[in-house]
Length: 440
Image 1 (cartoon, one colour):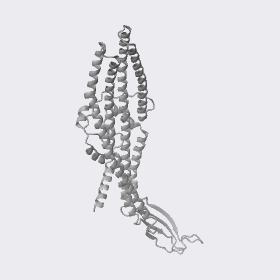
Image 2 (cartoon, helix red, strand yellow; image 1 turned 60 degrees about the vertical axis):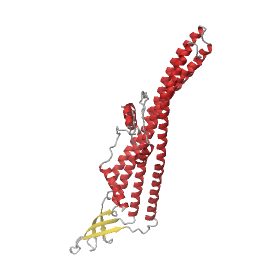
Image 3 (cartoon, helix red, strand yellow; image 1 turned 135 degrees about the vertical axis):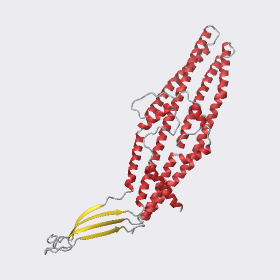
């Protein structure tokens, strides 16, 4: 009885989807967490992307085909002439001559129409799952570029701080050298470091423009519009359990939903192939009108009925082959599903491990290295002012402090990128009370 209940469950799912279809168009609730500016960018990208629009139209088209696939063929109406003598072409010469009108209707074997409707509905469900997966992919790509842009903007701020600091130190070293209290090599080193930073500024400007162009491309904008990078993002204190997320991904991953729909489609195709062994029936009812005879005798009109059905005489070359093909197709879809289902936990584990390691790196920099670097920078600057620390040591300490600040930003934006990747795999938001508290 298990196959019966599986078919019943499938029929109920398809029926519910037909009666209560998922809303079409762009939803404001995204499956990835995003600050309001990023939400607006993603919504713009989803609204303008031609591939997304094409998929949406395809989904609507497939929905319209559901009732068509489960409906009967149009009845056939015909007229004809029977037994007309060719020597005179008179309708009243022979008693069997008649003018006939008929109607015919082809009726598929019991259950075929329902299965065809289910197959069409599952095709629409599959396409809608693909649409959702593609929306997630585009959302992730926009978010990833947005966070990369944020890091480049942070890098530009650090670069500006370093340039300002080195300009001050250069003036100090020049003053000390002119009064005989400093060395010329201090001036030269400051100039070299400043030139390196100016070169870095040009590189960062190019990277920023490239990323902004990429965002504009993803949003399908006709003209370039500057993109404001994220700033002051809170630390996402995610507490993730790999096993829980792995189990969740097996239920909510959008590409697994696609594979499940393909398995259900293949199962319905097998049922249809088995139904093909049974004959379709063609019912025909005809009314034949006869003229009176040449002697004035009235002849009764005729009513005819017939049923025509196909005979599976060539079933080894047709029905057997069709059934075998659908069974192999079902096996292929099951293998594809299992392959993805086996790979997902490893992908989840890798992402969770990356997030945990980045969190450790971020906390190490913020809790230890930044504090130590600040102390070193302060003490080296104080020592340089009284002549106890060399210029090279002092300037390296100042640069190191700001580089640690930049590295902390790198880890922060990496966390957001990895979170987006994880949410794309899950197909939904990560639920974390700590995360929501931090972002409120």
